[in-house]
Image (cartoon, rainbow over all chains, first blue to last red; front, side, top):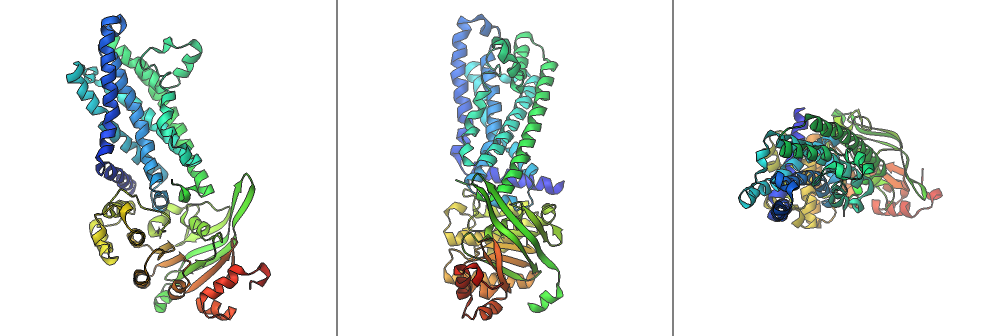
Length: 265
Length: 259
């Protein structure tokens, strides 16, 4: 156990060295969430004068934008950290060390958490002076939403890592684009029942749909819906299971094909 | 050195009936076909062969990076295929074709790997290995900005961080000038003498193999076509040096190669 923790710490340290060594990377982490927040802040201001639905809960769009970025940053944090190993052709060294695949996965998840905090916290804080909206006014439910979305991002990130291992660097773009397929069905800016009836079951198969419905319940009705949060965590458990299985299969396949030594640009 | 090997009769690497077949859309490709060999603790064995002979595939299987199609690998008494995590902390690997993260400094890279291998007293060990391999001046430089020769020395430092009992080296002196290459060979000889480690290396430098290795495995088209000490092979083929033996084997038709 101590050995495992030590190896996970080693990998986290390795990724922190990369972040520390490049200020543009740090800036990039916070850049998009901040830009998104500014854009949606102005949109919110406009709608507040023209839409009663938005006016009912100040910040509903801003909160949605900021929370959606948690999923995106979390997924990206896992897959980009792994891609760092591919870009530097370092996988061969890592997998002849005592580092186990699950330890690498856990270190990627820790890094995703750190990168997400670096990315979304500045935007969350900047929204307070800019729009007089504090997402922290959600209180403890914010933590629950954050956890639910973070786990979803981890699971998607690990599935993408598996696909990159399986398909090679050609699958790199999946790290950037795949999350956007979930956006329309996650009920980020509108309730799930806005979607066509046939698409709603698909939406309920995403943890994010439960989280954003839960967020609106807090903001509009002032209640924390445990059923929705439970739903999010149950679907997350399925996602994590699928992610673990796909990653294990990808490692097995990579070992059979010799891909661990040959990966790189 | 010989006395040391005699005192440690344990077999460090034992390979039996090892086979690797890659399956693809165009059919199966046999990369390694039914090879077997052993390396004693304190011994140095070379894998020689032309491009595509199966050297890298063999080393990859020994490292656990590649799953064999059949056969067995035991390293330091452990079944490498089933229990590689029991033995990986006791071995290490260096290759000019597998790089260390470019953006990390040499010191950062070595500290990360020291942690991964659970090296005790990491700072002291990293400093000591840097001193021994004469890379102290490189410690604060990003690994990606080193020359090829410097990268080779840093990769070797990483490979020796955990004082491995089994060391696998792919072209350990590639890209090094003759002086530095000679220095590295001397260092490896000294390391083996001091630790009793077993070394398996793949190299295209025949003079290096003659100097460092007790045994040579000649590979061709995935098979071991001959083996013995450098002196035995030179004598058997009636040649002046190992390079001429290598050329004989590499250019020979199957029926001309001695069994």
